Image (cartoon, rainbow, N blue to C red; front, side, top):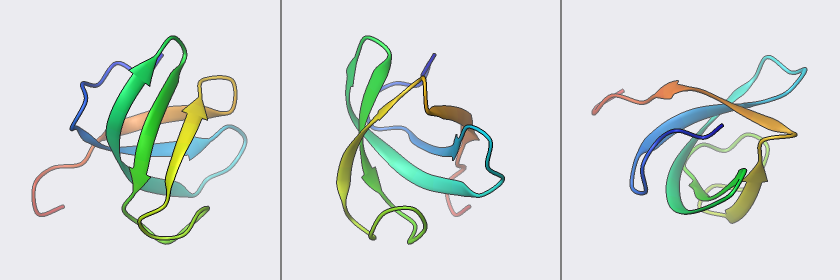
Length: 66
């Protein structure tokens, strides 16, 4: 589900919600990604969390400079 490579900055969205969160992928596992949160939305800024594809979807890559 999470098709981006380690180091990519992407937007993710919680399933059923409209708000997106900017994250950097730190590690990958089957159906999960370990991310550093780059926006202060669902988690605290800079927090490191695992996201699973049963609760989150990738919206797209964040371009340099947004």
